[in-house]
Amino acid sequence: MNIGILEYDKEVAYQLSNIAKDECLNAQVTLWEQTADMKEEISKECHYKIVFLSLEKDALDIIEYSRRLQEVNPEIKVIFTSELNDSVFEVFQASPTYVLKKPLSVDHVKKSLQKAQRELDLSREKSFTVINKQGIFTIPYRDIYYVESDKRKLNIYGEHGLVKSINLKISDFLKYEHGIYFLQCHKSYAVNLMHISQLEKYEIALKNGMKLPISQSRYMETRSLYTNYLEEE
Image 1 (cartoon, rainbow, N blue to C red):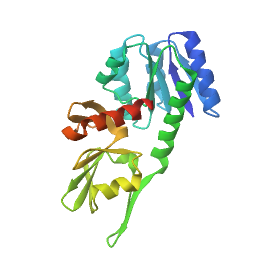
Image 2: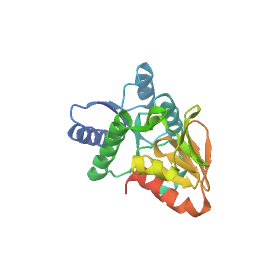
Image 3: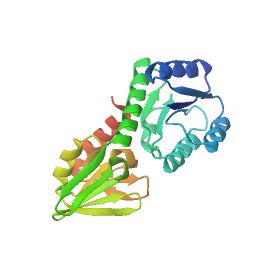
Image 4: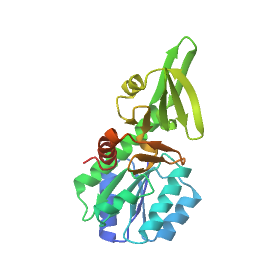
């Protein structure tokens, strides 16, 4: 596994590198001290699975870059490190796997790596499968952006729109994946946590530009579940 670390503080960089090597067996770790070096390396070949990005310099540029990076490679896991106030995290246009506050906690760094590896494993291996009279339908969970309940049918949407309609209740769909990937933000919608770009009051923006409503009664729960997904606190 290839891990990249953009960090301006050498001591913090080596700390992250050592933890990453201990936590991720056979990991190849690359350190960048400059944003330009990181962008140049990744532009050559985006083979990194996990990247730590410091927000101590050019924070908005880094956030926007990570958002575009995830559009090109949805499976890459981004972990931000910063001394910024918690309130800033709400305006991120990217979808970080984890947010680490400085000074770093070794335990939190390990948790962020474990979460990133778990998401990589899930996105590679797990699929939603339905067997009925029409045949067998299988789609990886990572390819499902959201599902919509439409009377007795469940409409499954991917990056570019409707993928398939099947006879299934949204509650039964959520039982299939055990609440690992999706949260139900509305009585008619369940959204894939991996594809949320931004959560605003009563609305969720996805990485493909789609927007979904959040029921007023579900807003606090939705916000809490998404925050836990990002930070696992």
